[in-house]
Length: 587
Image 1 (cartoon, one colour):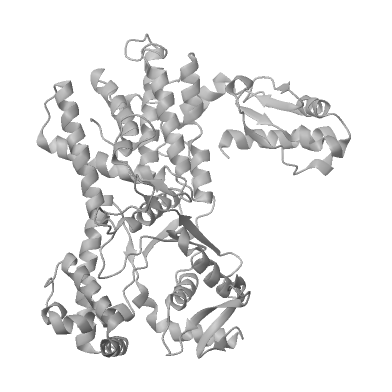
Image 2 (cartoon, rainbow, N blue to C red; image 1 turned 180 degrees about the horizontal axis):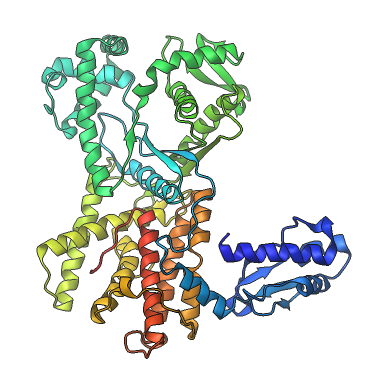
């Protein structure tokens, strides 16, 4: 809820008490944005909900509320419409005052959170010895955006990369490399990541088909867990090789993240089992130690267990997740822990969250949140794959976006007969290509699947990153054409006269509400929708036929409109930065 909406809500609550008595203190006035601008800006629907309780017609209730309602500093006189809606239209003078107040505010009127919390965002999480692929795209981009928004709101955010860097797969890979490529286990950079992935696949095939090799691999795992020097050295080399490749992707995406892999929690796993035993939750089932869960059953209707220690004494993902959860609460002192993974892992999180709650490990002031997302689909509506049927490498996907952006820009420059340096072309292609991929993902409701289309995401029209980057660059073009330094405009009075100015002003003042909603609901697409609508409102304001003159306008309208341009550009830049998207001064 933005500051204006909050003020109106308070006034409505006071009017309810004044009209009907103290029993109505705290009643929600049901204040929402008006469904149609011609009825005003806000609409209070509380009268309809009170009709039965008060035994009166909703219009009569609305009339009684309006009699006691004082919103004269903010709104025109309230109007009652239909069966009892209270319509509120913001005063032009109020809007002007609000815009004047945020001109010199670097946060554009968005207040920081009243209380700063320690928050952890667990995202990306690739596996060592494997390449990052399209399946890591959404977790990385969504997680980074959520972290940016929480940081902007003033929270202490720990960005964690819970990489798969421990377990059976390493025993398998090390055992295989000892036979076929021992140098990779003693020498840094002996393999590139592509070769490492190829060896991993061959090791897996061997492991699945050869019982003797399985035993050799298991012995390597034992040696790794025991800290055997040569096995530990080999493991570190393999991890470091993968990290370098991951960092190339993170640099391309401008993502900062701290690695804390599964191995970090390895020494804590026995304590998880021990404490679950003490709490009486552990049950031995076919040699394995399990916790039986409520709400999870097999096909026969029997309760399903969560295995925390296998019959051979080994541990699994759930054990590590429980250990990491306890560490994040006890050592990191996190108050909200956010896991950004695909929706297919929903049951896993529901299960180990339930175990942690049953064990009494989750304090009342700690919130656990699974942020699920859907699949990335090809234009055939199926899971995105290469032509050969392999999973798309994330590096290839990003490089292709930049390449297509480069080609599009070259074509546009030829059509416009513009000459630009190769350095300019490469930088614009990089920013537009990467931004297009990010925005195409973030603009979807994360819970849905979406179709990946380079043509759509690189389109200069529609709800795309290039469209918004173009609007920002267009505003910077106004400053260049008029030889204007927006930073030197100072605190000039905004005057709202044209309907497109009013529409743009009202939308600029909704930024705080949008960011607050994303902070709570963790749905970055709401910010995307806001920025897209803001871009459209600006284009309507600046449209040659239906909008207003800016550089050719007379004073004081000229400076007022330049302030509106500057506030729009700054809002776009701030909003896009929270999505992890860089702006361009020229395109």
